[in-house]
Length: 162
Image (cartoon, rainbow, N blue to C red; front, side):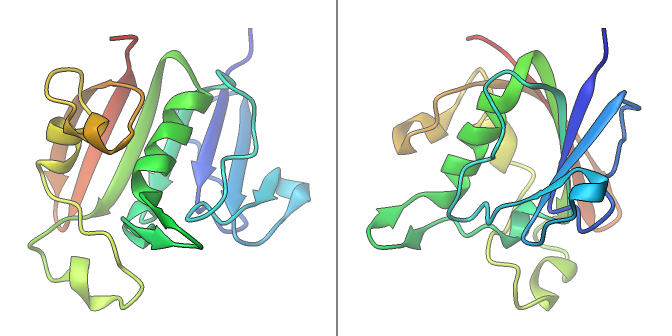
């Protein structure tokens, strides 16, 4: 059975950290030769079916997704993205995120960083114990493992059915 991975915000070269058999990507520009579909994930869903991927990765990407968007009504864009990641992951699938972490200066230097991630973001809001994001419309739950790597927080979120 072949495995599939999706890299969010990949540019023209999707990463494959889990050595999956099939590699797909999403970016604001399309490159169908490299299986990269076009989507603006701040306002659009992930253009793949439910339970399609064993793995989803995001390197230096989620900090660019606003927490709230007014287009045309108030929406929780980051929560919606996390719902989409949960939706496209197969049961027991893994989401890998590497992002600049507050309070490191790299979280703030880039003016397009609009979502500041802390060491508490994933374990408090998206885990299968606290899951505070449910009050904002998050529909899933993850088991969370994370570590700091220099300026970055590297998190692995394992899809659960809790």
